[in-house]
Image (cartoon, rainbow, N blue to C red; front, side, top):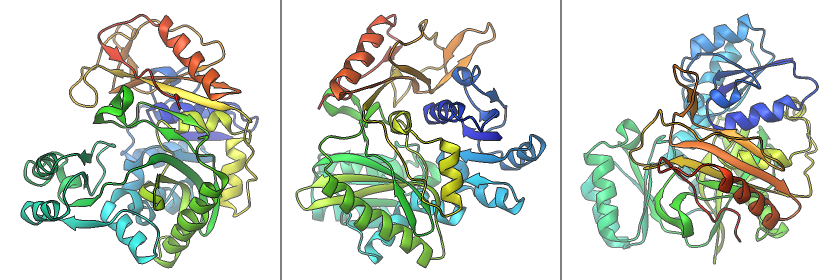
Length: 416
């Protein structure tokens, strides 16, 4: 079987690693991929939003399945294009991907179908938005409606911070069209967790819960990032919590999407929070999350292609999970998620004993040297019997990487 993975980050590197374990997969292509994937897959120089080129490549290379990693091509309708050409692709259509590409759509869907989430309002002008903030008070959350690579969310602890976020999005156009409309919602207090599920229509097959770390620095300090690390499963998420999340969030939303004429296929990601009033939804994503994928998939015992084929046919994939824990810590470029430099030499990396190394933002320069090519550069992961052991293995390895001012990482991933 020939499989194409679309994307170039850590999530896609993990998908490649998982697919390599399959006895059914002969060739793995990744578009465009990164330096770390070159030894495990054939990297194809096609960008993720060059949909016509990707369709042509899938035909020429006789691709049996395409798996879409990032949200951008999904929001642009890559699944619709592939299906129109009778090519197998795993992911939601453009109409279904709106659950991620518009916060306003997602929030109104939850309101209509009574799925628990934070109270909210949507705005396109800063005067009304600021009046609402003044009425509600801080802390409060300001979100760009569209896709902003995980950076379009401001958790404002003061009204002044919230006003600034409104100005940046609506007046200064910081996120372009993605921030031309904003959603302002109540601040929810509690522990967050992510729950992915394979979905086909109304059929929902949940994975294990993961917890990621959005803030840049230890102790959840600093700006929001795309994620500085994660672990799975999550000890404080009980069986009752999971049952509620599946029965009161994932299944009703899958059913709602069918009723709205937007039937969902692919991985649905629910960002959830345990509040004093019960579990509520923070957001939905229309694909595997990053960096949670890098700690969820190493614990999946099934062949990923078998799972995708079963789900696509409406058959229960009977997911099986290792009795273990995975921890993954991101190594990021200094300055991330704000201004950072690309092209910085990545310290020499040795093979990891009892662990795995994921490339997220790397490339080779003109001298074939490994250099950075993004905010999140690497992820170091380990699977062990206990969360503490997995955490220790990751940080033992990170201590062996040459320290440099060009990169940083959090030291508290997987510390419960």
